[in-house]
Length: 262
Image (cartoon, rainbow, N blue to C red):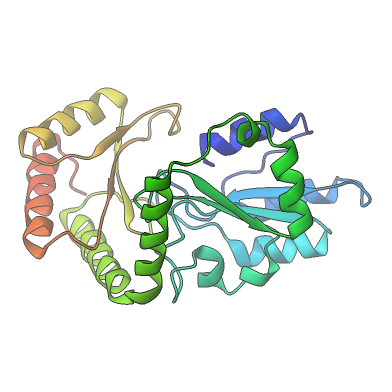
């Protein structure tokens, strides 16, 4: 369930790519055991899986990467600004920030801008600057986007109450959806999926939400496994209590109409 950009990056690397089952640490270790000790190995994973809002098991992944002498790249697009006491992401949340080799993310989520970043060892970053085709053959960020990202970073650092509000909303929405009887998968973040099932039902449910003034994203295969189409909801600290009640009421009405209450 990694993001498409990770899949594309792996293809562009022309490396020998091995895939393990979603968040299955036994399967990851099984694969690592088969690789030569002296071979360069890089584990790549999302910190927060963007479709269903569950977290990567970073403590165990870090343990395995150290045991089998690998490097670890965490794409924390949905974690930075949201997770961790300081908003530094899922690596901070799990206390493994100093044990991750490369941390990357985007300015298009919590930073409300455009562009992205990669953090790591100076020599590795220099190598990326001179060898990454996607970087070399792209235009630079415009000044307005840089300024927006800088201001957002300052807000993340100095206004932790926004994160507290966001998490209060996320907990309330998760409880509200589950009280309705909706399937929210394994989400433990402000990205909360509502599992619908078949693609056509998902689109019909989505249209009903739109008619009630609620915009969310319908997600179908190949972005999800076949038969696991979902409505992807995500939240901001600026959502009001009134907004939350309107959202829950709309989902409750649609769930009743579609027979999705458990």
